[in-house]
Image 1: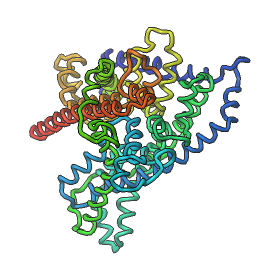
Image 2 (image 1 turned 135 degrees about the vertical axis):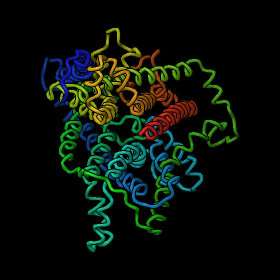
Image 3 (image 1 turned 30 degrees about the vertical axis):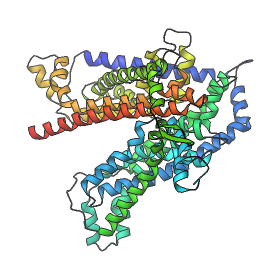
Image 4 (image 1 turned 135 degrees about the horizontal axis):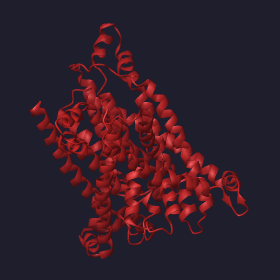
Length: 546
């Protein structure tokens, strides 16, 4: 490691640590302290009250069951889709469509999933009418399971697809030469190398389901889960902040377990020194099965969103189905709703810009500096922690600690909340990309008389354009669709689209809900499309230069 004495990187490191101390550690510690406050003073009364209550135990058990079920189904379906891309001879265009459609639900907030399920599979739902039968009870376990699978499948798919791309396929040939049958070859050369990733997918999907509020808010029904208990304790008709703090702290239990499991599962990841280019064996039956199976999975998952493009453009679903633009025009003419849309754009852009700066600085401190390893470990630990702390817990902690301060009900508090909440993935993207760059650039530039800042601006950053665009896209999209954290800290003037959708649900204004959902989807598609084009152009430019 080249020793550099520039103070800029140390300042960046201190600022990063200070930011997470102020906006992660302190709020969580404040929440922890609140959970022990009782009328008699400090004690365990709140914990005893919550744990002894019948409602909490039932909700906690329900959350475990539904989260495990959803995680298992999502991982199996995601594996099938990833396998169809990596291990079949399907047309490249078809594979691109699988990649695109599998992640499409990520561009919508989870609270919209529930409303789409209601209008698709309810007694008067679009798909119920087309099929002539209601497939399942939308309120309770069935609706939650379907919604959670839609929610977690894209994350699981991306995780498995990425790891599957680094499996050396030449071992399939070796296995067949050794006389192994097809099933044994599959388990030895595909399934076994993915075992750690599949387990990690289960953990991630379980955690996302366990902590999500958007889906149970609309289709949970009487099947109460831990997220709805927490929301009712903090923002219900009779708020109880102490008991709410207890529920929030208990929601951190899966976070601690997730961190431990993910660390343990790292040992099962198989790394290949070289990835061989191997032509896949021709197998028409396999290709047809995977092609049709992938289509069925994606149609089943995405058909639920068809209703979003229909209901807002008919007079009154399902009784008057004449085409109309009245609902769209009403939203566009409603200054309060257009203001909320502008708020969302501002928060998303500001989150993306600030998040990009912070993750870039943090990654430079860990990947391109001579800071001691034990200090770098602090930022790596922050990334691991933020990846597993529920958004609801962060939102509640912010609500408690920033009430009565100048930051209360401000856009900047929401922006900082988003930056902290979604820090993990962008940071790892930045860090991995920076580690791949030539480590001698800073030294060479220093010998040429350039400062560290000039080196970063002139040499390092131009080679990071693709990752910078990816990080901006990640932060923007997540800021547009998040609801679990901001619902606790948004005010009347700082309301964003997702919190407005929650409010419109209360007044059963579902036409407006779907129009605003289309605004979110359209905005995210435009941003993703433009940035993806820029990323592809940048990658092609690099290939030509090489």
